[in-house]
Amino acid sequence: PVTGSVWKIEAAAGTRISAGTTALILEAMKMEVPLEADETLEIVEVLVAEGASVRAGQPLVIVRP
Image (cartoon, rainbow, N blue to C red; front, side):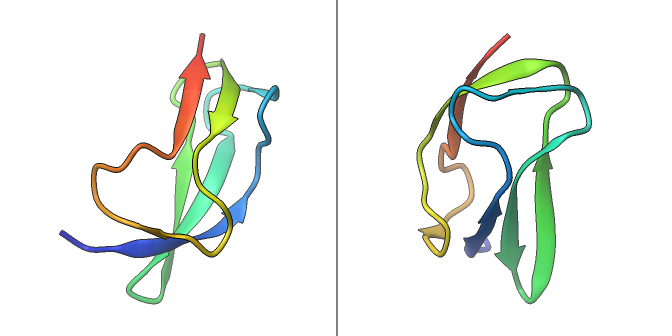
């Protein structure tokens, strides 16, 4: 699996975002990879910080509809 890092957090805890909105941006292999909502939801908690290393399958945010 490819590891990466959290480049930018776009949505803070307590924020409601709609489908297609970017919650955070990862950087892997010199590419920016947006993590987008696939439905309207609330970001309950962000589990990572900007600059943190992350791995495939790692939870990044806790959300609720």
